Length: 405
Image 1 (cartoon, one colour):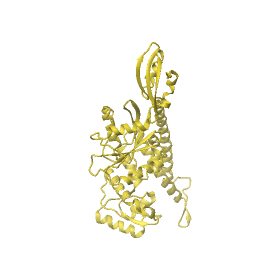
Image 2 (image 1 turned 135 degrees about the horizontal axis):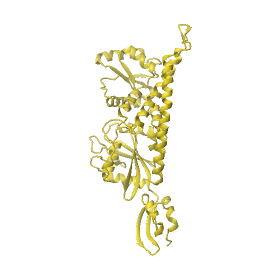
Image 3 (image 1 turned 90 degrees about the vertical axis):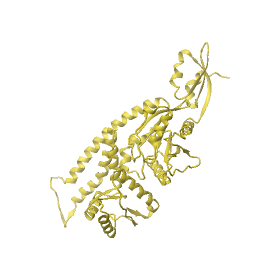
Image 4 (image 1 turned 180 degrees about the horizontal axis):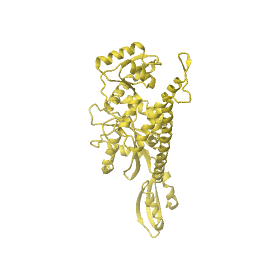
């Protein structure tokens, strides 16, 4: 890693994060090397002396790969590889490899492929430009032919266009489904947070509490276990809401992934409440909390109200923070207070009115019972006398039938 002057405070967490990413990609970290510098070397990232030190370290520990925390150009990777004799990749390539391993759905696989192509294309374009420059004092032209890099770049652009079109169609289908959900009038809550913080496990715990275990989502103790957003209908004390599980974040989430996974990340952007799930047993929880909330700013979701939740309270090293909800997805401890807090935030402005609904209009009670609480008080000669409790905006359809005191 080349640690720049303004990155010294985050060096430790970035190195530990990169080690975790390596393990998630089944790469065993055996050693590390850090160069403190004001800038990256334009050709080899590391300065010449440090590059020689890296080559010596590789030989000493018998490493067969170098993983840079820094993002590198393909040209820089090739130069370092030539100097060290082993494969060289950067952090973005590592994350893309993990995403490729985790992708299961058609949409996720296309999103990963799109991110890979967008990441590789700029380097190909620069390589193509360099082939047209002077070499040895003479301009070398390939005539009517086309350089290999230009041909590959053209193929990439065609594939990017095709993937973008296909993902746009999926996005339209998802938007149609979201519009159908929107007609229900249910509030939306999205689980967000650093990868492997326990979001999917928390969703499953909430489903277990509601006796809806058959609707559980995939959850596993590994980075980026979830690449597709999942949505479930939740209910607590008569209040229903839609709960979304989203893709996990890392620090400085690569722009190519943000762009490719835009439709998946929209679940967070369109929520009424974000539940930021934090691994309370992680010694780097503060740094990862900031990294996750920086990603929310990156995708323009930072204006949405956030409820922080400390998960894994039964894990060794868990630290409880005053004023923050703590939960265990194993024992379900803390799940009910969390549901209570979520519903109170999603439905804060409530009032009750007494109405008399004519029997021929009684369908309105069933239509809105998912967003308001309906209590039948009496069956009168003219209709149902009922008390309706809910947000003021949800009560508008009932105001016509309100019984004035």
